[in-house]
Image (tube, rainbow, N blue to C red; front, side, top):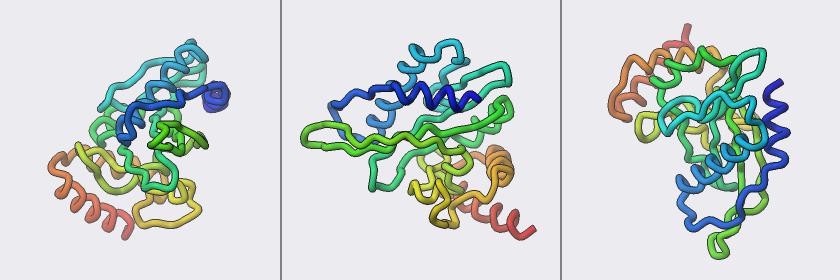
Length: 197
């Protein structure tokens, strides 16, 4: 399975230990580019493409069974997961092209004074379990907020109940672009009606 190949590659990955800034978005992109560079060396024959900042997914890998989508999202431990996934429009356009959808999620500690990363753990979380039912900036969907929510060891009303609910949600929302406040209002209305069926 392709996920086993990804896990094997990540086990040998050695992330840099210094960063010039503690800005959350920069740190996330720092990890993302480091992992992508590692894939180029560790599993080049499986790489299908690398996505951009707005195109889903960040990385696509393929084997003889099909293509697999990966988002790379890094989060500092003991903080709210403030990441975002891609927009419903991008996911609606590309989701069906992939057999499976995963988030590679490094969780780390950062000593801001020494500028050192430590205690890095990498989790593999299905995209629908990682993603919140609410929108973030740039009309992209927000992360669920806590690892415990993503792993379903704690409950939250912002979690999707199934992958099918997630797919139906972003497919519907992709047809209604607009300001974040308006989209969140529409998202709540849609989910209430969907779950009432």
